[in-house]
Length: 308
Image 1 (cartoon, rainbow, N blue to C red):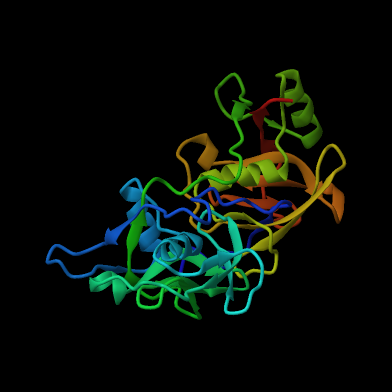
Image 2: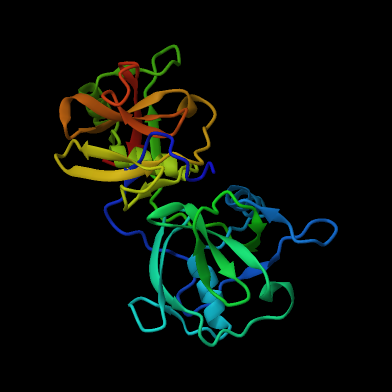
């Protein structure tokens, strides 16, 4: 399953992302079951379901959104702390957010018709078992994790609005170019000074990771042991150590220069601060260093970000 397959590269967010979907007590606006032209229930795997809902200007609901819906239908619902009769949900959503909560389906008022008998795919996997998906159990209510089902086709419902972007999207500034229009190559020190001369800054490894995430990559996670993620151990130009995990799955290569070059960051590997700067490989969305890939060409293209 492409969304969670290990592609040999990854990264980790220092702060826990806050899911900006509906609050725990609100009922999200989730539509009916997606159907084929003959009226039968249409089945898709998780990747296709995510893409389908996005093509409709909507999003595949997270495990927490399905829990919120079940709660609005009578279930005891969501708790942020462990309680008797509640089970843990340890979800990571397709937008990279982490949702840890407890849920009880007690009191759930099962709906009539297909909604009350159909299990529906969510956009969430389990933090420590990304080979499986969380499903909304129409008969019992609430999110249920099933191991090794990520590639399985299942019923789909879409929720109103696009999936929220929970990581900041850096503001791209100047791409340094030569007089003939080709990207201008320079060393890391020269690139830092150049961007500063433009009243901008050379981005850190994390900022380039956020850019890749804004282009579809599974992106930054707070858990560097997850399948499909690799560690980025960066030290930034200001001396701050920034260690995180990253996943390039679902990255959509942009057209033009941004998809064709390796862009230098202001960060270096903590275990090789002199000879191994990090950068963004535009073709793959990967945050890699010279140590990770000795064939990475040097010097590198320079993309400044807005702000100092």
